[in-house]
Length: 204
Image (cartoon, rainbow, N blue to C red; front, side):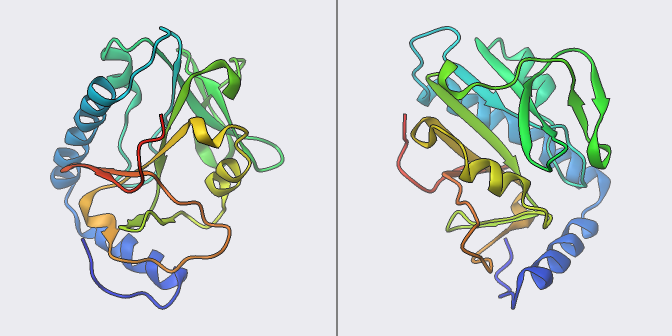
């Protein structure tokens, strides 16, 4: 974790990109491999879903250095949940489509499902959103890449009381406090290679 104060988001992004670049490939691989197991324990021990199809997990395909890949391990865990991946729409909004075998390159070169069912929040008792970021702080603030896709999605989510927002990063991307703006969306938890940090009361 870095304790360096940042004057603005541009300075924070520059510093955090530099920190990630300093990590070796083996350091990143080792840390990334440990993150999903903490998610597994959280779901198994703390999530109480009465319906077999009551849980949806919003994952993502890693695209930037340091991002953790959850899709394969989620499929292998035997969870009775549906997995959705993001697709960037023509209006530059995120929508989440159910994970199928075939992924195609979408906007910004991000792999996404095609011709799959879109997430309908009312279909599930609970939705867990795994949200990548360039950095997070211990107040639950997230620093994205600057395009605002996740902030818009979270701000317009129709059932926020049924959504758990988990910011996903490596320990080196966590800082004490980030510069924030009014539209920034806070996380409920932070998930790193050393565990899960609870930021707000469990909402399910």
